Length: 288
Image 1 (spheres, rainbow, N blue to C red):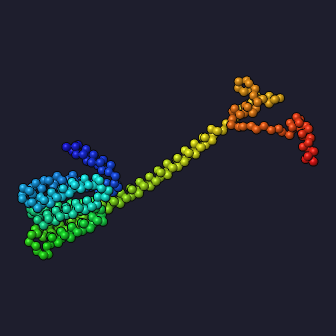
Image 2 (image 1 turned 90 degrees about the vertical axis):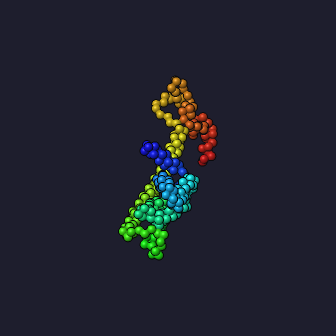
């Protein structure tokens, strides 16, 4: 039984993670799911009990609240902001709690269900709006308990319950508020750290891409450069170079085959004087 329940909860949380909503809304939807899983069976049991006891108004409110929870779940799966759904369900549930407080039940025990309201108001609506809803419920409960207009349809609670209920409800509300406050604070802190980490990862990736691009450019540049090294057998007379196969090659042919160098032919002044003395003498006379 527990194994099946854990598996169902795990699958349910995995389904929530796939919904395209913010992390804060996912947390609220998880809280809502807990209320749904715990509230529906409880409402069914007490709904059947009140139907048998002919308490049809309580039965109708329980049925309405359960229907709101179930239908709200299907709307929340598609809505990006489920605040209106949470507000509607909180309003329906608050009406149920107010009626339970008015009716009292067996020895006024139905008033105990109001302690659930701080959990719903703060965890689903946030600390600020939840504080407004919870304070409103506190004031309504105080007015109904002390009943300044002496309405006869309100259950007459013993003074001991009236005195103990309001401070205890305030303590539960305060503790729940601080739970929600620290939850939202640490979640915001985690989100800021995650954003900073994501930015750092992005910057590192950009730097890595730039580094890889530079390395590739250097590799391309180096691949275009060929160097000659070692001992070259060269003819003392014609200056030909002997290659590895024993053939003698013109020096420009040898270098061209082993590098990217190209040659343009000209004639130096010494060779020009030796080979073409008449032109060389003319140049000397012109220079005078």
